[in-house]
Length: 198
Image 1 (spheres, rainbow, N blue to C red):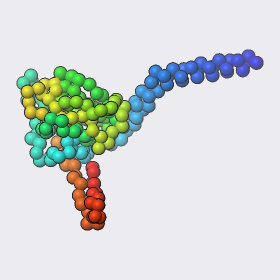
Image 2 (cartoon, rainbow, N blue to C red; image 1 turned 60 degrees about the vertical axis):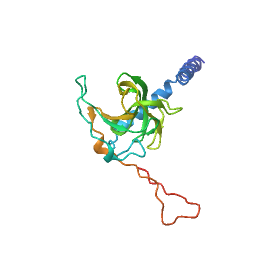
Image 3 (spheres, helix red, strand yellow; image 1 turned 180 degrees about the vertical axis):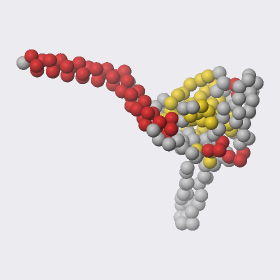
Image 4 (cartoon, one colour; image 1 turned 90 degrees about the vertical axis):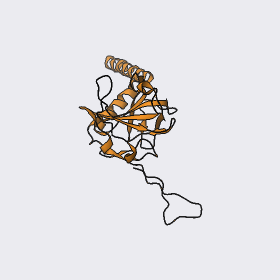
């Protein structure tokens, strides 16, 4: 009988602990970090979708490592577009951070294969409903082009950076144009489109 009581108490303690983990969200956090750990074991993407839909790679002036006024170098690419242009994730992964800082203004960071962080800065606003831990694809809107942070007074643009576990790398060689919808030869009268997406 004593043994049954001990197991009952142990079971009750475990049940309460599990309930607290679920209520406090710790279990969600644990699952999120387990997913991130898995990403570190995968080879990083070598090809990235252009984060702005109607911008071509050849339209980007390479500003990687360009000197900045305060003694630092540019760790990314500036992609110019009209204010409010939707910013799409360049890769699949999970939203790792949403926040604001002095240089980037409103920013979103996505973590993906190989533990790489994809950094989107100077957002005018965030996409409605996004939150840390959300799974994203190359069709997920993260936010909208703007001039927040140190981009105030400049033309609207997206600062796009890629960070590996050992530091920043130039995203431009990895970027690929998004392929616009194309009409196939088997077009029907209702004008269905075939969409090729990275």
